[in-house]
Length: 187
Image 1 (tube, one colour):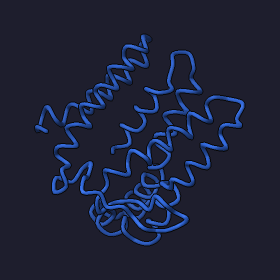
Image 2 (tube, one colour):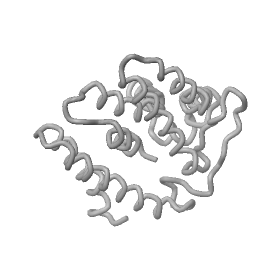
Image 3 (tube, rainbow, N blue to C red):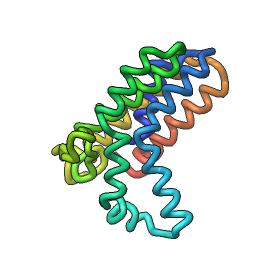
């Protein structure tokens, strides 16, 4: 699923007006399992000058990149973090860990040839789902429509929960950025 979805799911579960640390922790937990991908993309695209095609067709599948993804998408890493977070004195730590764990759990059934090794460190085996969140050859066009509607539903929920101007601007921007491609180009 796209990172925005994971962040919005975390916000829908944990974010509350006036609880900024909890909100930011939930958003960060939704981003964390994908953060390495963004960091490596930024480095290779803007520092090394590689094309996006080289990054996603070649570098993405190298053993080095896959090893990083195995760690930050491991059920064991996030499950362990979630277990340890129960000892935290602030609810922000469990919110971060729970949202990160939910992120990898939600990604598991919707990655085909770009699957991650979710059972690291026990194995580098990957479950290649028949469904992809993005690839039309694996129902990505159908899942993409579902995900767009899901994101818009989460935005509506958050819109109702947050009544102040700045959160609503962020929510409305997220909804518009999600809906715009579907409106302009079709599902």
